[in-house]
Image (cartoon, rainbow, N blue to C red):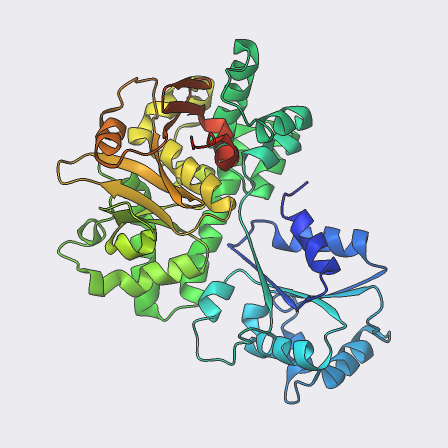
Amino acid sequence: MKRLIYNRLIEWKNSTNRKPLLLQGARQVGKTYLVNEFGKKEYTDFITLNFEENPGLKTLFAGDLSPQTILENISIYIGKKITSENTLLFFDEIQIVPEVLTSLKYFYEKAPEYHIIAAGSLLGVSIGKPTSFPVGKVNFLTMYPMNFTEFLWALEETFLAEKISTIKKIKPLPDIIHEKIIKLYKQYLFTGGMPEVLQKYIDTKDIALVRHTQNEILEACKRDFSKYNDKTQALKTAEVWQSIPFQLARENKKFKYSDVRKKARASTFESTIEWLKGAGLIHLAYNVTTPKLPLPGYTDYSKFKVYMPDAGLLGAMLNLPSSTIMSPDDIFREYNGAFIENFVAQELTAQGISPLFYWTSKSDAEVDFLLQKENRIYPLEVKSGTSLKLKSLRSYADKYHPDHIFRASSRNFTQSGNFVNIPLYSIYNFMNLIPQPEK
């Protein structure tokens, strides 16, 4: 399947300041598939070592971590001399063997001519541990589930994907085109962007199989809780994880520790939130009460919302009936728009906008996201239905006078004065849709 991040790999390969690349991302977002495609298409020789499939490979990194020794060990193992010329080395699931992560430092310092990609599902967790991490010696890339643009590519709607991603002026699309995209968008909300799930949907159109595959991925995530945590921490992680969909389903989506466990406080679950974040299994949006630059300087990090990495997995955890896709308007209203706001968080994060921020006032007004472009802050409110109410946006505008205020909804592109409505399916292109400020 075609992925947007592929071009970033090409840039890395051709960079004059190339370092070993650390590819991060949650389990089953397609890291291994992507690197395999990249290695086979872009290099003459492609060598891959998967430390989860073959635990014995860790002995190749035992003791001496000098590149010369490691390359000699690998060459003997595969029966072929490894050269740096047009060769890609891929170390997969390296969280299993911390020494592999450490070795990247020495490849950068002593053998920078070699092209190396290392990947793992829990690298964000491993990075915080007291092993020797190659600070400043690696390049980073983070991979996410397939976004709506990639979903359209997978469905061979390439021209439609290109059209959405290149819009720069706020002008309504013809109704028949808008309705076609909305129909596809609703399908995406159900399937989500996990590559295996999407492939099953494309191959079979079997909704029950889609849900079964989503549940298998969720089970794999739960197994990781126990595999990479002690028993006490694993239980806490499972508690927080199971609470997320139901916290999102509330009208007030601010995360509450007491909804995880009665009378629980932040000290009980703070490390759990960080673990899930490091594992790429959640996205966080932090509360801002005064929208000034820099936003982190006016952020209350004790107040936040937690989003799932994929709307399809969110639907599976909430056990959304498969019949919902047959009457797809329901998906906009179910669970107080949890799917819609989660989708927007996913799309913004996939653009590299992280962390996310939202605004609240003392009078209970709330704007779902605050986004910065250059030296300006723009409010974005997400509407799950077709309501025209703009109470919170207007409240924000009256206080802070932004150049433009934005609503994302199922409606077509419209603009009235400083108010702009953009269709939910165009969120990935949001930064290009911000009109130029008046001078």
